[in-house]
Length: 120
Image (cartoon, rainbow, N blue to C red; front, side, top):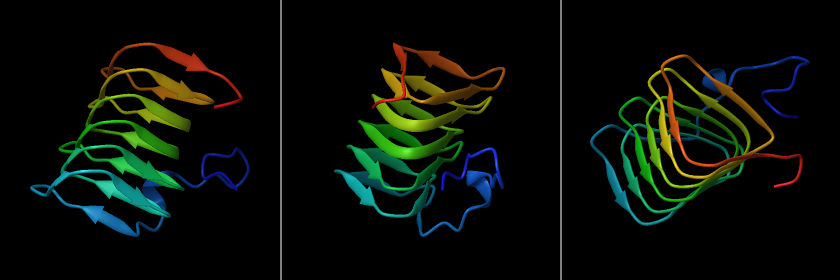
């Protein structure tokens, strides 16, 4: 069940986070995870998370992001392959987005190409 489904919707922000990359932490390489991950640090590499990802305001990703659901408060410089994307007012994305659904708050910044499709 998608955490963004219309029935019994539970925000990704309220999910049980299994992994946290804290502010000040830096990873130079790819990150893979199976559950829900929050990133407040810096990742220079591809990020593949099976369930969901929260990118905090101080979080930065330079690389390809693949996950089911993502909430972006921080910065992504790279492409996204996601089922559901929410860009908050502090979020900044530069790259190509492939998604089923997209939500953008006023103030968010996005530069790149967008492909919305049922197939990813």
